[in-house]
Every structure is written in C-alpha cells, then in structure tokens.
Length: 174
Image (cartoon, rainbow, N blue to C red; front, side, top):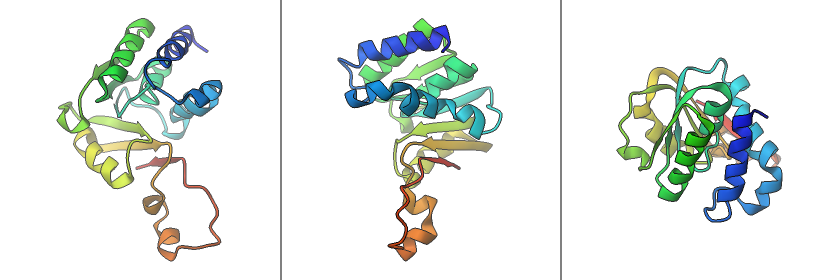
C-alpha cells in the first residue's frame, strides 16, 4: 500500500463515522471489496488514459483510487456536499491529481474524457445517458458494482431462463 493510499484509508475510516461513505459492515472488507475492486481497472480496461471522469464518486471508488495509485487525472462528480467535502480533503491530503465537482452530473460541464467510470450508480440506460456528453467519441466507460443484468445479458433475461442461477455481472465495460 502506498503512503498516499494509507492516508486515504485512514481518512475514510475517520469520516465514515459521520458521513456514510461505505457501509459499516464493509469496513473490515475495505481492501478487497472497495480498493482492489477499483484497482482492477488498471488491468482490465487496458492502458489507462491520462484523464478520466468518475460519475457519482461517493467515497472515491473507483476514481480517486485511480488518481492516487495510477496518477490518472480524475474529475470526481458527487452531488452530496458532505461526500464532496470528504473527497476534497482526501485529494488535498493524498496529493492525488483529482478535481471535485459538488454538483449533479447533468449540471457539470467538462471536456469529454477518454474514460468515464462509475460504481453502482444507476441502471445502464441511465448511466449511458449521463456519461454520453462526458465521454470522448473514441473513449470507453466502465461500471463497477451491480451491472444491470437486463442490459448485460439481454438474451437470458428475455428468455427468463430459470436454470440461470448466476449472480449479475459485477462489472461492465461499454
């Protein structure tokens, strides 16, 4: 764990008592459930571009982690002002190359980025609508968390296959 990432983890634990950044039940699983989940973008999405936008940043997963560990310049968009305050302090203390926008995604005007990320933000149709004006034409997007199964596996869902007992995908690249 890098020193900046250790600072982030300590700050998250401190703030989580007052601002519900992650579930208290998730604190013991912070590394595998949240940090490693975010770090996988450094390998599954191919080479990371120099800039990204994180929609609904919350506690900073995955955007702030990408900024801290990989040096990606990330615009973090979070409408909850308490969570945005946490993100600002985390950016300041870790020195991460990130900018916090405390606003609704629809109201933020930024140049399109080559990568747009999110984590458990919204069903895929909503996510795509929000991401479209922020994503470069040749860019890509990644959603971590509970991907909308009806859009990730439309054939299975249309058939309503009772034999399909697999959980929904936990990441979707679009």
